[in-house]
Each structure stands twice: as C-alpha cells, then as structure tokens.
Amino acid sequence: MLIEPFIFACAGAVAVAVAYGGSLFAAQARRLLDHPNERSSHATATPRIGGAAIMAGWVAGAFVICAFAGDIDAAGKLARLALCGMLAFALGYADDRMSFSPVWKLSGQVVIAALFV
Figure 1 (cartoon, rainbow, N blue to C red):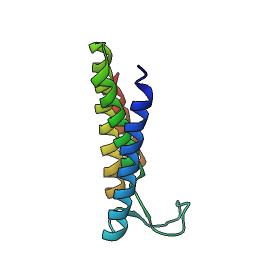
Figure 2 (cartoon, rainbow, N blue to C red):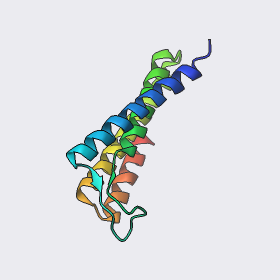
Figure 3 (cartoon, rainbow, N blue to C red):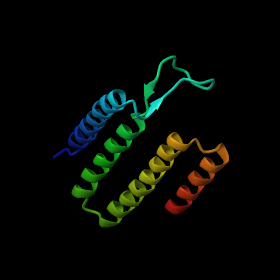
C-alpha cells in the first residue's frame, strides 16, 4: 500500500483549508493584514496567513507519517522536528505582530535550530 498519496492529500487539504479560511477571516476582520511599506513587493494590503497554511499542512503530513510509521525512533525525530517547526512558526507570527529587529529574530531562529540539533 502506498501511503505517500494519502500524506500529500491530507497535507494539501489542510493547507488549502487554512489558507482559504484564514484569508477570508483576515480580510473580513481586517486583521493580520500586511500593509505595503518600503520593503513590500505588493501594492495593496495582503493577508499574512500563508505561513500558517504551510505550517498546518506540514504538521498534518507529519502527523499522518507518525501515525503510520513502524519505526518509533523515526517518528520521535519527526515529532521533534514538527515541534521546532511550530516554534519557528510562532516566532514568525510574533514578528509579524510586533516587528522584531533582525538580530532578535535571527537569535530566536538560532535557538530553535539548536534545540532541534
């Protein structure tokens, strides 16, 4: 039995659902919008929900892999990677909300990478 198509389908479905629902929410509530500034590549306010969709899809795929993994050690490593990924996502989200300096954001990323290693 090939599990890969099931993994991709679950991850894709979750990513699309989060992107669609989150974008609708962000646009209607006027929250989590990235307003154009001198560093932007867009001209209108754009929802900042893409990272959440990617993370949700990745975690869904990782969950499916862990559920069907025969190797407990490999599942544990994947779970640790997923946890560090969620920490990195939380750091990015906090940066979107509070605009950290590059030094603070890089420091947080280095700490998260060190936790994984």
